[in-house]
Image (tube, rainbow, N blue to C red; front, top):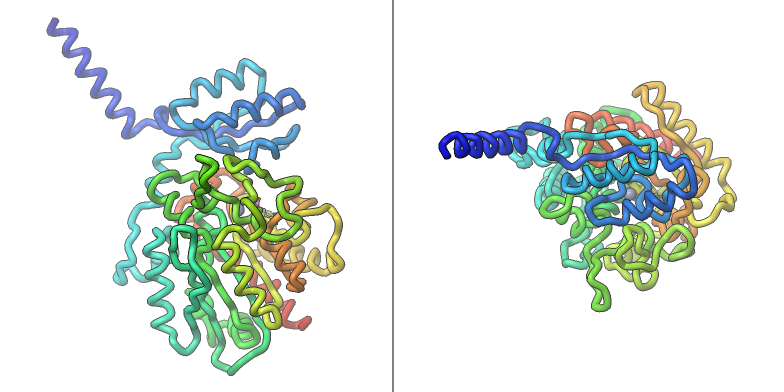
Length: 422
Ligand code: ARG
Ligand code: ZN
């Protein structure tokens, strides 16, 4: 009896230790390639199980032959999923082992303690902290900022836009940038906050930044999907959509980047409320989307330049994503993103792909950039920031500054060129 008891204690202790320190009990991300159409169907089946979350592409319907798939697999399903993949002779490898450690790292140290000053922008922030940061920034720079409430989310969280202006006096041109349309893309709101801090700090020190602010008002929406973002902090780190509920379905959330009135809900979006690319009940059905479109419609005459910030995959995209057809100024926008990508490669040694959305990734209708373009904002861009999948959505805090610096270089390059043109 005694040795048995000892054994039981040892095994239990072993398990506790493993849970804390080993990677074997953790969720994993698999890199998978489907070689044939048959494997595509199999993978669509496997990934539709709820113990997995697709990182790339965003939905099973978008899985294609010989195109890398990044699949997040919950620990409880790792054995079953890898066995299935092996049995069907898939080419695959583990891309990320220690997801829980990375998640811990991303939520660590989340305080807006003023004593830790310089570090604030190299950390991820909870929704409450984002509101707090934006608020104190506007109070610290009353001459250059204005806080504008443009609406509220499904769960009634406020949607604040921070307007940045130079001190040289009123201008008639403006740029818009939104972050955090997709909840799990944490580097995106981190970039908007970083952009605000950087622009205000280097105004009147760096000539490019001074020009940008003196020539244009800059409207920044740091977090367009507050409900989803909050949910990624409290409940499910891999959540993408907003958190709107409807009576006739138990599935929650609309993909806000499929809900704009731009060839809405055609190929590349889903009318199934359970899909990660669900387009919603009608265009602009979601309060977050409606707030943005209402604001931009009422500022149509001034806003000339639109940016939407996502992650990951390192791409600089422009319209259209809803059709393979080229926009009238395709060549012009192509030159702009090309110049930005070359800058990033030269100064930061990172590769960004660039081009129109439909040609560079996949058809994705109902997106904000296409909608803005069709409203007459002919300089319209979507950026996908770092990385290429090494960490994916779990980009460690120590990479925030490099991701933001290169993204800033791209925004700045394009903004200065557009200012010259206008
Ligand atoms: N990854 C983004 C998405 O799937 C791409 C956005 C490109 N633009 C667009 N309008 N779909 O939403
Ligand atoms: Zn996104």
